[in-house]
Length: 154
Image 1: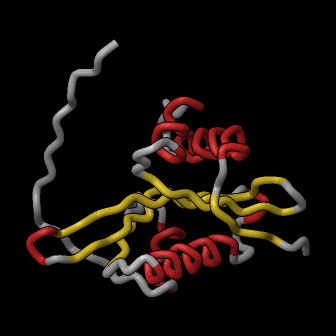
Image 2 (image 1 turned 60 degrees about the vertical axis):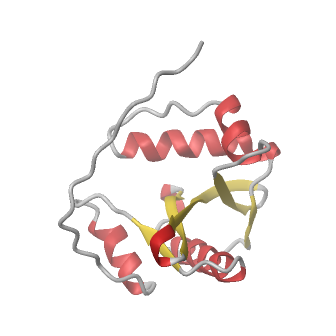
């Protein structure tokens, strides 16, 4: 099988990332609103809120992981959220998802984070099983989540 590399995503990976983000959101019945401009702002700009890793085989993108910082100020704990994990359909079941997760874990450890969170759709038992096999523990939450949309200029 072809060697797969996993490295930090760069601006040159924008088109591949946009395609994979669109595929991931379509898989979940949604439509991506990510653009070159929003990836520039959120991944590569002066105040990025995400980090991304990209997996490539023979120079072709075959997966990615996007991480966002988290924190629990009252507990003095810093965390990382594995916000997106995507593996191209032809690479699923090959261990690539696990390799991406392991790379995220090493990154979080190297950057001094205390924990990693990840979510999965209730129907996506494959993802749930992968996360459990990689050492994540299922968290039962009984809280209520709220959200407020903020007005945008322009």
